Length: 147
Image 1 (cartoon, helix red, strand yellow):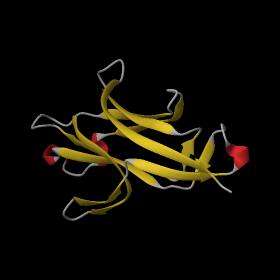
Image 2 (image 1 turned 120 degrees about the vertical axis):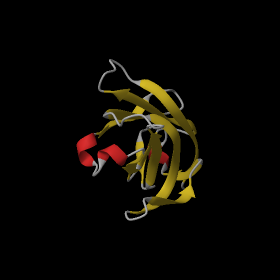
Image 3 (image 1 turned 180 degrees about the horizontal axis):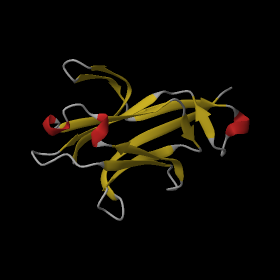
């Protein structure tokens, strides 16, 4: 499976019958208000996000794979590191499956300063020894201190 696209949004809706996805409020920047005592510390902000990726076999057979998602802060420190396993047995009529959508829900966004944060999306099939970076999504975080 190959990554066709990945996008960051506030919310999505999936129609199970038609398999169509509605992506609501694409996110490329976040404005955050923090207290004075939170400056320079890792703070979790209540800002729900969804990282949605579309994967395609491009006509080949569906093979199991793992998606790794990392969120890097402006200093390239890893704030989120998670994996999603995509397995054949989780899909009905697996022989007809050509495209798959994965969805990572993030309830609160970790910040430790202003700047560009990057979501790295990597993939590894069951036959691979290591993950390969397939997509990156930048997010600009602007921080204001509460008065």
